[in-house]
Image 1 (tube, rainbow, N blue to C red):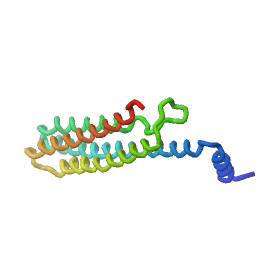
Image 2 (image 1 turned 180 degrees about the vertical axis):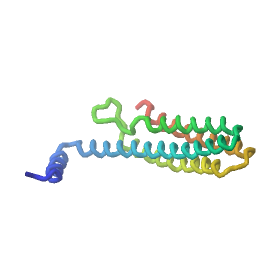
Image 3 (image 1 turned 90 degrees about the vertical axis):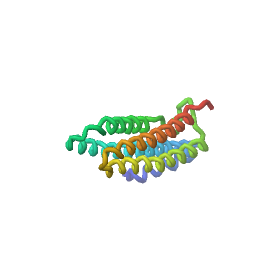
Image 4 (image 1 turned 45 degrees about the vertical axis):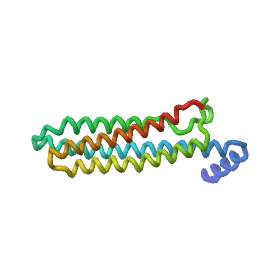
Length: 168
């Protein structure tokens, strides 16, 4: 009996003989990469939210209730954005989808998603700054700055959706 690896290698070779299959498989791999990038971005936002939730709990336990509303709003914004990114449309439709994205567009989308990762580091740094802040009077200002960065990040992600939804 032939080993599963040997059989799959043979199937791969047979598929390579069919015109267009190699290109389709490359696109499917890119589609998977797109999903992995979005999952990574969403999980990083969730990590930042977890840090923020611990900060909220610390303030609550100390009886410092003033910043809780702002922290909760920021936390909800992080959650909403993480969900938006996680469930965004794929960068490339399947072989039978009516709407296709060309490879050049997919390359640009991939580069765009990587730039989102860089911007996310700024958001994470700002949230980390909140965790380090102990003075309530400067905390409010830092929360506003974090909201501003998160709004900018969200707007940039919307540009991705505009790119994906534009007419051909």
